[in-house]
Length: 283
Image (cartoon, rainbow, N blue to C red):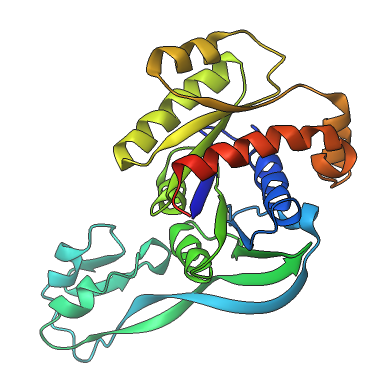
């Protein structure tokens, strides 16, 4: 069972919901839970689970290396590259490794075998255990522009059994799509504000395009107006979780504490969410 927690914007509470749901499933329902922190540019789930890190693996991406003694300057490699990672100027081939997606198209099209692949480090993946939950996250190398290859590596490190929760990066661009793709269900976290509604609509469009079942959770539900609920009613989108704007929750978050530890009355909310997820996702 793979459940992605996503949103159209940052700061809506994805990590808050993901970590508390993971702990509820593990501690109250005794399920094997793996939490994947796919926000590799700034992972923060570990701040709440305090895992003992057990493994760390360097992740690389294959990029072209040109042997200019073999190169004829035909330019076919530049023609096939859709990302402008390789160029041919006056018969001389130039490479831009930071733009390369590692597709190997240039290698395959070179008829003189002048292009081979070398590895470029993009970050690393760590895994550990905290509170009985396996946590896997990636850390993108500083200055690196592309996160999807590292997100793929995080997902590839996940076990094939148990409940897998994905704490996704914000937005609706390539990193989010890479994170959500292959999930059984998506929980879209939003807030009842004009910005929250605008970005929720974008996230709904994305999820529908991917044809993945989804529902909405509203964080800080007691602020703002009723526009988010009205939109969900019009679109037939179930609202399966509401967390009020509670100062004690904010204080717990700032200390790196889980809601369930500080305010155990919210276990009922996560129990209802778990029950709903059990009904709509494969076991």
